[in-house]
Length: 267
Image 1 (cartoon, rainbow, N blue to C red):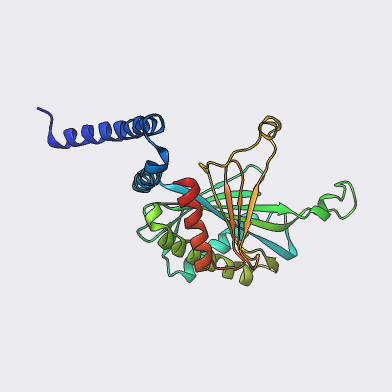
Image 2 (cartoon, rainbow, N blue to C red; image 1 turned 180 degrees about the vertical axis):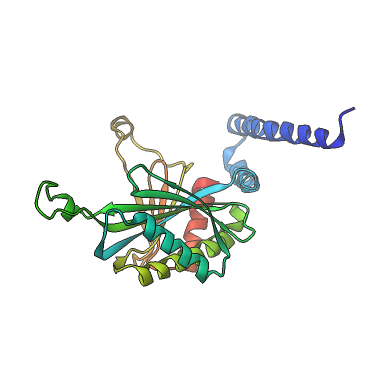
């Protein structure tokens, strides 16, 4: 006889494999044998609850993005030192709650991926900093006298994973990290401006359909939904949704937009 722990694991694996198959079969039966108008609301609600439960195992992934534009450009060889200073400032501001686990740099030292662990959070944040050369300086020929490549802006992207039921608490943790990072940037760099944040959720499983010619030409067509004051927006693409906020910190309305997007087009 197998040990209890092995039996439980086997049963769990069987359940994970059979539940989606059973759901697909039941959906086919409903489509072909019953009146969809009667069963559709019940079935859609059941599927959403199941998918919400499933995110405990297959968590949702999203990215929080913003850009930092510099008033005084950085030397091209400054990204490593600047990154170290920014991360140390975040660690200090958080009293060590945010721990840097790993850094991976690109060959040109213009992009770095940083693994950031927050307290006892199971899933770390994956921070990516992209140091973008000043386009005006890029137009200068390298052979010109006094040419000195420099960094004009920094793209900041933080990938985070969460269960659907923990969306709000996950965003609170993320916003705390983003606030410390923005404060560190303002203190350590000559910042001209920072963009407001936006969330990118992918992939999106939606019922939105495109005409055949759009699919054939592979156009990047989007559907833009805006709030009445046009300050919040949700933009749907074929493979992702972009939720924009008019604030540096994400407010309750933006969180609700993210939740509605996930509920209606992801779950």
